[in-house]
Amino acid sequence: MLMGNLTIKQLRYFEALALHGHFGHAANACAISQPALSLQIKELETQLGVILFERGSRQVRLTTFGEDFANRVRHILRSVEELQDLARASRDRLSGRLRIGVIPTIAPYLLPTIISSLKRISGDLDIHVRETMTSNLIQELTEGRIDTAIVALPVSEPSFTEVGLFSENFVLVRPNSDAGKPVPDGETLRNMRLLLLEEGHCFRDQALSFCNIQTASTGGGLDGTSLSTLVQMVSVGIGVTLIPDMAIRLETGSAAVSVARFEHPEPSRTIGMIWRKTSPLVQQLMQVAEIVQQSAESQRASQSKT
Image (tube, rainbow, N blue to C red; front, side):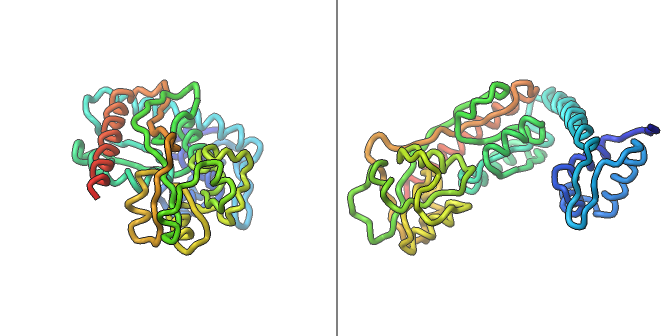
């Protein structure tokens, strides 16, 4: 096998194509043209003397060797990222690239305030945001593709540090016609048409737990991709749903729905940040955690005035 000098850039292009399985999508992710990406992958295969991908009409797949190669590449790129993190950690203030993951039931409501605060503290901070479900964030954090994630705790991953930041309650959203009716408890909700997020969202699991529903099927007739969709469905009388406190203003302000609080003990969740225990950015990430906590407090104070 003849092998020339492999470059980190080639390895990053390879990883992108292995992840997306599509030349166009991988090229977009790498911010280069598709022909340029194809050329780099071809050169990499030539240097290795081995075919890494099976080319199909619509997607590409890793060969057996490509799968083994991908595992090694992930470790190499992770080590490179850690070297860059080490350099960033030597600075006292937040600077450089910061890759934050956020779950969808937090991102629309808290991110604008968080990013504004971060930019105000450090104008040259290069913030990258990844919004996806907890399971994806855990994988990406493990692989070093993000620096930290804002999620509902606990995640119970031994390799992660978990820092709890604040707790918030869930409220019941129901049609305006139901305003003033007694607020159902979790057991009563089991027999109502409860609209929930699709499988994979931790907020769905938390709602099911409150209602003591063991099966994923609720009879709601809708598995939504966002809280906004669920609230709009409630507004036209399809059912009821639960949303977190932080979503009330944005999601119910223009919808024909009423919001009711449950009797004690109210359903709730704990929001926090997670990062790899091996991350050298602990000091900087603790600064970010303080900003997230302050952003949540500011939002709660603002919401209580309205």
